[in-house]
Image 1 (spheres, rainbow, N blue to C red):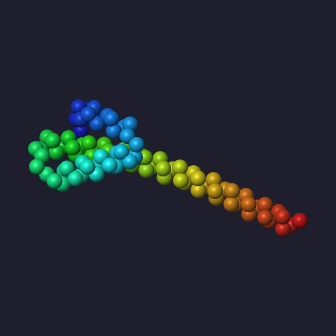
Image 2: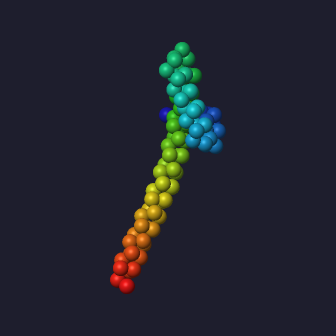
Image 3: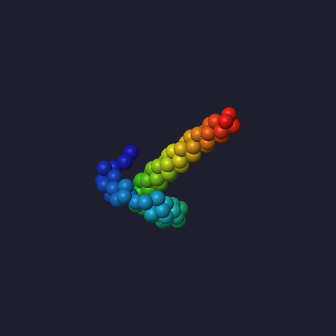
Length: 91
């Protein structure tokens, strides 16, 4: 159950790069583990952590997709090379 006000407060996270989101997430986790916050502050921090984790996942998914595309291109080139080698053997 998220609060629209909290979503607005975490809107800046959408602009973060992976490293910035990861570093801030690490700090959020440390603050939550340290404790001593009241319930409202803890919930706001938790929701920010969720937004940061989601942003990290978005970056990782994008990176994963790029790697898979690069690998599929490389696989396609390897297959083309194999066919070219077979053609040369027939000559």
